[in-house]
Length: 263
Image (tube, rainbow, N blue to C red; front, side, top):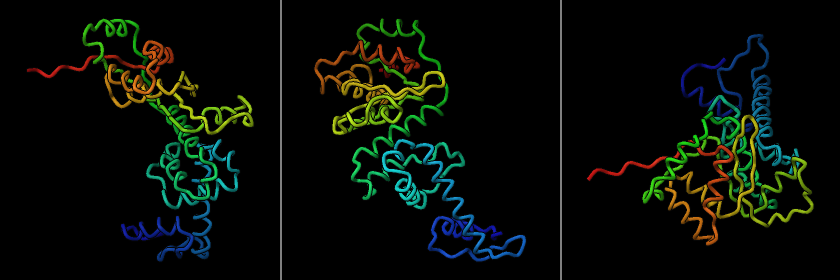
């Protein structure tokens, strides 16, 4: 047991995550056994459980690099970025960024973006519920006349767009038994819409322009500005088709006109 002041608690946490640090002073056991030996077991169990949590969130990442490599990489991450929440389902939000900078993983250039896709799936599964926008609201919004370009779309809390220079959707799908990994060119960029339908999390391939449009909507841009950002990259962008995709997947929860500032 350790004394309850803040300094001792910080020392305990630091020693828990750094095997190079000694057992904290003041630690005792109920049966008189060696505190250092018991602390070492506890340290290993804590780190191992956090690695297991990461493996649950990023199963395809683990398959891509192998269990031994993954666990070594995850252990480094765990010691650098311990959980900030008791909910381990949310642990690992910084893992893709860590992979980006992890030198031994650079031989798999798409690994971090696959991790981002897997993280988006976990986010979608645990996101709050929200009702898709009603048809009547859609019809009313689309009758906004000259202000139609100002419309704001609110997307479901589960929705994410993951854009990559690599074939992350095909790579992820191949690890679900959909497609042949050997036939994939990892260097062909792909974008994904991640959305929850009932309890199923869907990963849908998006054309680059649609991905740009959906990203702009998520950033709070109005309909005209979001469409223009897509058109800038693809002059043949079809706004109607993009809206139909989002609405058809229940990804839109409201459509509204922002209030104009009073003069």
